[in-house]
Length: 388
Ligand code: NIG
Ligand code: FE
Image (cartoon, rainbow, N blue to C red; front, side, top):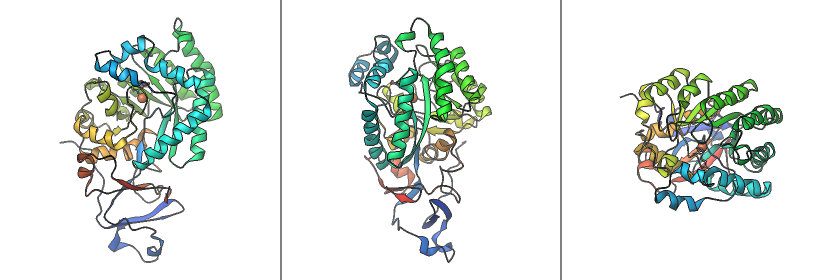
């Protein structure tokens, strides 16, 4: 069976860090003299794993959409709800109406809880503004939140989430606005590292998605894609073509699309909480792994398709729904998640030279952690070598 090499497990391990970076890791018995007085903490019987990375969230949004939850239970589809004015557009209205301070405070509250689940780095998308000013407002919220707490944050511009009502009769004019105004402004202000597009019926088609992602690339923003979530829209192939750093969702991706992604080195991000809430057929990670693709796992936290920021829950679901082993799932929320946000040189594993980001887990094994689901097993997190 092909598998995602899980990385080495060390029993009775020691980790030494200085200035926020790891300077030594190995078996405690082999700890070189001279480094032993640097040890700050005895983890007792806890497992120490790399700090978890949630590489796909929509953290800043106004309001909730709990009403849609029951509607979907009665058979209304995600797209039907969207067509009736619910869905993403309803969150856009609530987000536009919210002040920056309100959004900052919500993000801070979420992050406090998210960090307790072992998350030390998070990717945050805009996409509920959909005007130049409102998209910039959201990205500025992330910048402010970044300065007010310690979970590492990386921002993604998702102006191409859906076409806002103002442009309903002329979607191409909205694409032009993104390319001619939003992207250059955001790039100039250095507000986002990545540019994402929702490629789907009712959102952006292939041509428009490609145009936007090519324009972003020219400005130094690496493409990402919400691809093949509700239908096979050729998203995986487009991700390969535009050299996207990741393609996310992928419930309906064809084998050929998987191959294209694997060849191009695009990280496949599974979002099993969204798969579960929208009752989509889960992606089979075995197919991706067999073809040589790296599979990351994230929450997709947002008020519609994935109203939970519980990354360990996503990892349990990755095992049950996506057929990942617990160790593959953990690698999907650490090293491969770091790849999905272009940070694998500095975070994602416990290696000399990387940042000292760790999560301490009160479980005997990774298997036990994801198999026996409890609210949280995490006892402590370290970011840059410090507890919060
Ligand atoms: O990743 N698919 C598009 N965007 C989000 C859902 C956003 C929403 O429903 O508000 C997702 O599933
Ligand atoms: Fe998403």
